[in-house]
Length: 271
Image 1 (tube, helix red, strand yellow):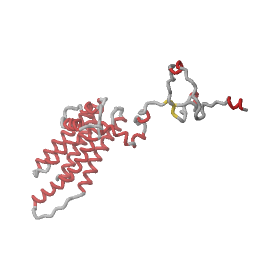
Image 2 (cartoon, helix red, strand yellow):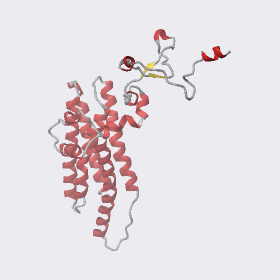
Image 3 (cartoon, helix red, strand yellow):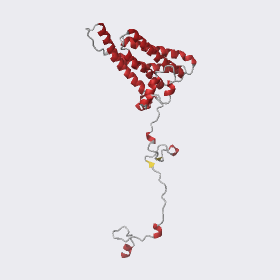
Image 4 (cartoon, one colour):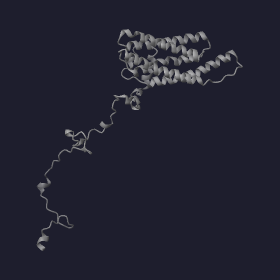
């Protein structure tokens, strides 16, 4: 019994004497094989389609990259539109100034790399509130000029009409031209159309202040000049984006639609 007990390993017991380590063993360098981290659970697309195997750990950002929307689901995703608001003040100001150059017709070339919706929404919203406010102000000035004793109240319906007309025009008209041109075989971009039509409305922002002048003939001259400039801007840029020469009628139609909007602004808000 004593002999069997003496043969038991005692290196794990307290107070046991550690084994002598050879100096040659200490100086030996062991190479650790390169580790390959794996992700658990195993990847379903393993070898042979059996669902076995493991997926290697890739870059941390690979799983978070935004995938482009290639189906209709992207239309209802807010993240799909963030790229169209990635503009700074200098870019917006440059495009605002370009909207005054009606004869250039190269607006699509300037926005081709980065069309934006920020400017179109900002211009449309600004124009809605200006038409409602200045339209009421013009009505007040006319009524006070006619009869200073008459009572006057703010017409809230101006806001509803301005919002419906401006937003409806800036959204529906570009969509209509886009689908018609697609049907006729001409390629186009709906975002670029929205951008171009939105910036074309900017000329009516300073024009709204000039329409406060209480002289009717001057008002008509101002609105016709602004409408012609805006209509020419839309028609020339739309014509430059169309490939077929037999679609000139579409550019002509856009010209008269824009001019009709200008006349409507004068008749309804600044009578």
